[in-house]
Length: 139
Image 1: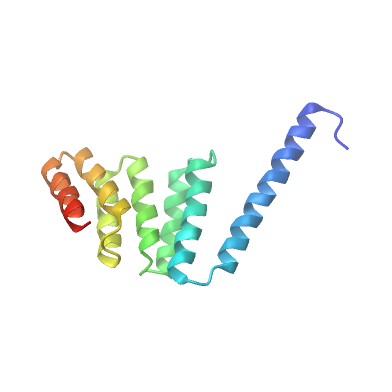
Image 2 (image 1 turned 180 degrees about the horizontal axis):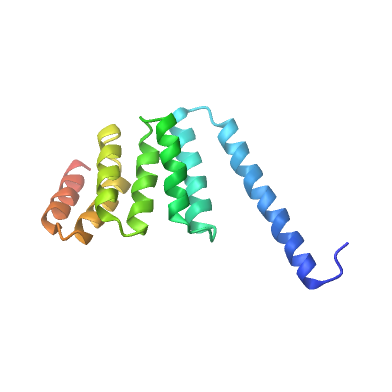
């Protein structure tokens, strides 16, 4: 079907992409536990946005903002928004979203860790250290 090397590479890429998206849809549809569903969906989306070579954090912000309008109590979307802003070096916005997510679901290590990182980037080292100390005391 494909005579050239490039044709074979393009076919291989499209074939792999199809299966990645099929897997994403399958996991989202088959998830029963809502917290688990949000976490799985978020991890898969984060993988597509951040690890799959598609590092367009602005698109991530648009998507997660849209999802937050539909599900404003979803702590995972707040985490993802914070992560997008952190990667774009918009640290004040990252802090805002991490704090909102922590208010919904306290005690998650990733929130504390990323919030501390954003606070350090803003020069608020003492707040970051206090946050990490509180986390270690709670464990």
